[in-house]
Image (cartoon, rainbow, N blue to C red; front, top):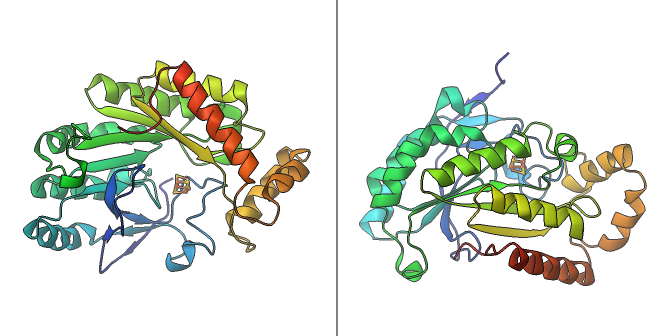
Length: 298
Ligand code: SF4
């Protein structure tokens, strides 16, 4: 049975960021859909933090291509080139994209206006669009602030909170499996793309230990990642759709012994303690060095 989806019209699809994001290189972001059917428990784009501006459920921004033509034409005329990030608030390759092809149409427009792209996904469906991405990589105009830092106009990243299949089924119930993502990353690498693993968020006491991280970073390297960026979990909100509520509910169901430990490192904050974050950061840097993988895109 197909995924239920509403079709909506939007006034804007290209979001300009205040600053160029140092981690993702992006100056703009695009989300072809509102909502995300991958349904990750820790996702903060639903609920009260960002989700209050979203329509409920999953919706396709059906007029996004015509809106993007106008917006990119304007930016290109002013030579305001910048990496466009896909994947900040919804995966650009949800199952509905197979039929609707909105992401594909948007990429064709981006190619026409010579903008560079950073795609972040969990889905093998990205393989369908490698033909366009190849052309974007050749034609893209690199923004002046990134000149000398990047030699390509296309970066393809894959998201992981874990590479353990059982854990992924619990915390990312609607997403393609970690193994599928790894194999897709390898295929993109073999086609000559710059690829990476974005391990965010790492799950406290589940995927953040020395042993688990060692395994995850080793796998990313084995499957061709040019870089790996990782960071810890953040938990927002008290409402039923907020990730904090959902995360503790799932933790209580599957790993009740971790509830008090997790609460202890968060205290009253949305982020884990400084000590936890510092130790995690040091572990990531050390293990990236061990596996000889960069922990930034460039
Ligand atoms: S894939 Fe990303 S946007 Fe979609 S539910 Fe998961 S974390 Fe949220």
